[in-house]
Length: 115
Image 1 (cartoon, rainbow, N blue to C red):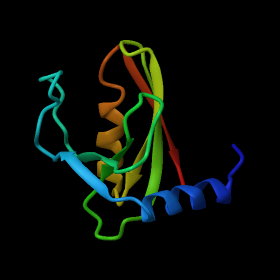
Image 2: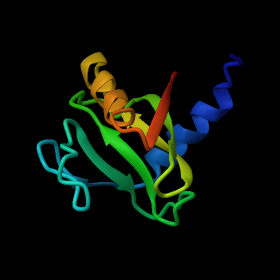
Image 3: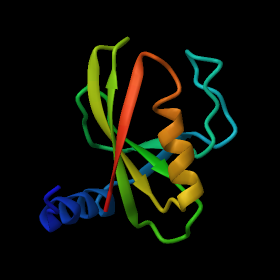
């Protein structure tokens, strides 16, 4: 894999310039899929846009420093789309929980790209 510092710098800039909105706190369930429990805070970057027409999704971990640790690239066969999810301030345990969340059904799969 080719590492691209400019890619990560662009993500850093996007996150720094955006307000992080946590609309699905850790411990809550997905509004459409009650079997999906959020084990890490989940939200979005206000004022951004993603492939699904909504804002760019983020997972916000417990580290106090808002460092972008990784991204998850997903394919959703139900929605027939793909997206990236930005992991911010996630420790290793949280990264594993996020990864498992995006690979817990037959219709959604994800890969993690670490910084």
